[in-house]
Length: 477
Image (cartoon, rainbow, N blue to C red; front, side, top):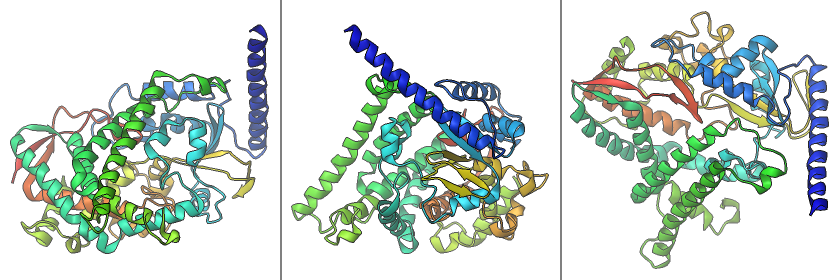
């Protein structure tokens, strides 16, 4: 028994020693190129300092309606840029991560078509028992190569052109349900972040699962619980070898939720497959799940797989009157588009993107070793005064009056709320359509004022969101 214990200790020691040697090698390589950062701490890397900074930043709300969100949302990046420069090396546990905020390097990185900087794949995340993988699954976000190309082609079809137009009735029906509920809050306070989250889950459930959208809402509830667990463990280091044999309470709960989500989806899938097999339907449906099933069963193997508020209201009334919005009119909402773009600049839903180095490669003048992780904090770019001017933290929709290209002075890396091609968010057009339809219908019915109880406290729970909700007062038109 003692000999077994000695062997285990020896194995752990050898693994730890080889890790430390590899980390020192990376640190020296980057230091010779002028890239420095906080020192590596055994096992935890920089995680403990990061957690402490984030907890401190979230302790108090921001002054109401100030938009300098970077020190609160990403305090570790904000403080380290000031100490080490625009690009620096940090440590997430034993993983080395190069944080890049230079626009030219980011363009080269995100637009690379030679697969030199892939995303971390589902296989790699599974190896590390990554909580994020339980949310993303083996889907479009975590796929690479031919597998990604097939899924992207299918998703492009689901969120493009005529298909998008066919989704508008589902959006309108969901918004009408929400506005009917809002009538009960006439002249009263209502928390709208929860309302919009419910709206989004209902819209996506209707579109993804069609008539099974109530089942879809159950899946969203479980995903929300999984998001909370993931956020809680984002900067927790795991011990090499030991973490393979021992699971925390959060890991056990996350595994359980992942299994329940999978079972719920498969239950919906089997219902549809049985209906087609029994002759009750001649296809698997036209919603997104139907498209996936049709592709899965395809015989062709290649296919498997304020003032602004007043201006915006006038624009909505001018284009739609009292009628429900339509896809053709949505494209004419110039003022609303400016407001949405400025909101996405100040509060991008995803505040960072991660890539990794596939093999030794050059990026700009930097030589990067294989397996180095690369972090692109787009929130930093969106709040960079060198890119946006001294009024960078002012809500100013008119900066987008002549379009995104002119607002960014043709610097494509300055504004990336949905990433950059070729891996930009496939659901971008749908998200913008849903947003414009919902806002149009709200502006046709209500005037909205911030409640005195509102606390301006943006934070990240995988996505950027208000920590204490958004309390407003509703007044019917």
